[in-house]
Image: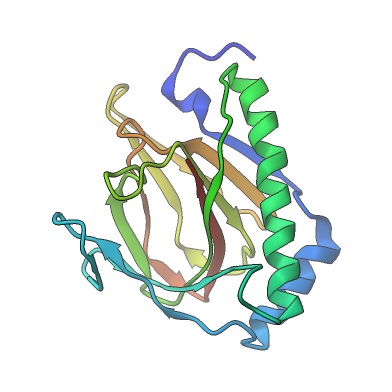
Length: 194
């Protein structure tokens, strides 16, 4: 793959887990198995705050430590290994040496009206290299992932499809946003690598 445009570094991978695993996760979500909390952001002074004018979503932090919950451990390990595998594929496709360590793993829940205004994922308190979003479901409307690529002065919309993973650089060249959900509930898993 010849890579020479910013959009070439936004890679989309489909059918990551297949219907069985994806359906299992969706069933847990329908049963409200995960304890969600309001998602926060870093402000300009690097304080963690709740600002629903910038981000309106809920999150659950996956972890495989400090928990006895085997379901949480299972999904954490599954997503971590999936991301590590796709970092290698991404590095080969983009001809980059992305030797990264996964930083966080979060399950997001965007209810009707939920959104995240334009932002970049790299910052002084979060020096991220790569960003990841996995689309858990596609039975909602709105909630599209948009990139506003300043260098080429155009936007790039990632189509909604369940079991889809998107990887891109976390830096200032990739500002992105999640449009408001207009119907249903959008679930996604996000992660970053240093």
